[in-house]
Length: 346
Ligand SMILES: *Cc1c(COP(=O)(O)O)cnc(C)c1O
Image (cartoon, rainbow, N blue to C red; front, side, top):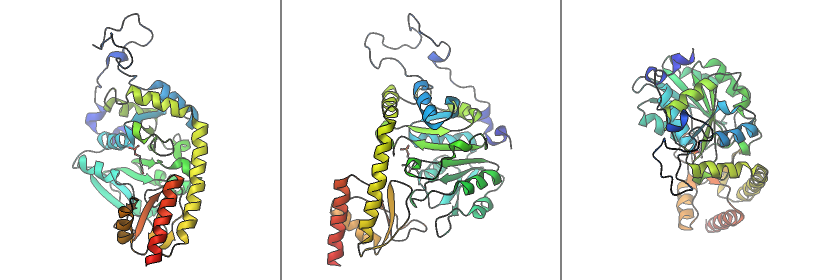
């Protein structure tokens, strides 16, 4: 399969909007090309449409070239743009592991693309045969989330590579939680697999959910197509500035991530001591998937206590499971205190 076989023909043929700043780069004496207000300074100019400074810093940190990076308004935009580039509405389909992050399905529905589920094994490992069996000649994307939300585990790099080898469409690996994991990133496999896309986000380890910034790493050809489909100025100047600030604090972020992992281990120990906790699944992320005696009742009880967790008990393989984010010390202590009270009454 060539890339052209996988991209929707209308997108392949698309002539992108050329924005005012595409034709001239450098320092001009007068910027009279974009109808901006030149009299009030600060945020009066359109931002860099290709976010060169931010990409340069990400490229250095992740060991790729800036041309292999696309930036979107959160992973949300990266996910949606993948559908719009590769999937013909009403014709093509995608395959995703089950259970996993809900946005892959929502975006499939928005784009009128069939969404197929391939259940994980009972121990939450990848069932490679079931993923490949779910694919047909109209399957454009296979979605793998690693570490996976809500099961919290990372998949083996070997297994993910097997999917890249056996599936001849686009494999997308969502690494939103990769900084909390010992499992390696698939970013280093991009050259080996030209139809691989790896997504990361500023919303978790980078502590910047509010700025809405997501990353897609891929071949220069795929990034070029994403760039032509996106809104010209999708990433605001405020977001680009704040992204540079956090990227320049990488050492601090690394320390905080290590602290969160320590807190996760301690939280798991305290939870395990409770009668209401049946099992805590191994986590490579900043949250725990916890099997309890009665997820619905405990979820309701915690809400009444002002402690909000995610009830995942209706999700495949997650019967009676709550997904609990590792919070700050006060939040974690309050959670444990409230659950101890529940334990003592039952
Ligand atoms: C939280 C999360 C994201 C982040 O999405 P943004 O739009 O970047 O905030 C992406 N993927 C998964 C699996 C997540 O859990």
